[in-house]
Image (cartoon, rainbow, N blue to C red; front, side, top):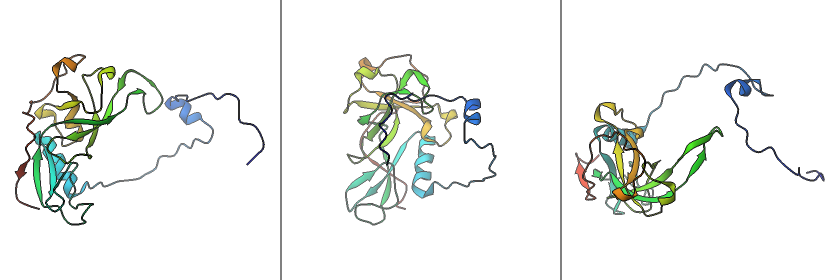
Length: 199
């Protein structure tokens, strides 16, 4: 620790171009020959296969009486395996959200991005998935807003979280912006429906 006073002003965040990043002091231009093999595991693999089909899958813990989205093969509350797969609705409620005016690389955005945690209908309260909101004015956003998934077209789905393009307000009067093309619209029923056998 020094006795020097802190600087009176700072330059603030500054975006770097690829070329400027490579010229920066301490930059090393070295190509790493790293190969990766990713395994999403049993629960997330099945969850992603469900998204490719246009459904959201959860795991049910009968002991805790919880329905888990995203799914997991064990319950972190009672430390036992979860019991079965269930299909839940593609609707939900905004648990929390953020309004981002700057991209990850500090570049300003012309339209803000709206990441949110969505509690899925039919799943247990207090847990959810993180995704983007769309077709909504940031001034209209609120915790508790009812939303629905806008799916990619069936032929475009790849088994990715991006098979859901974004969530939009369920109330049409709260929707803004151009109507983006989406896949099939589901009914939004919140009743959980068993899927297959218990695994």
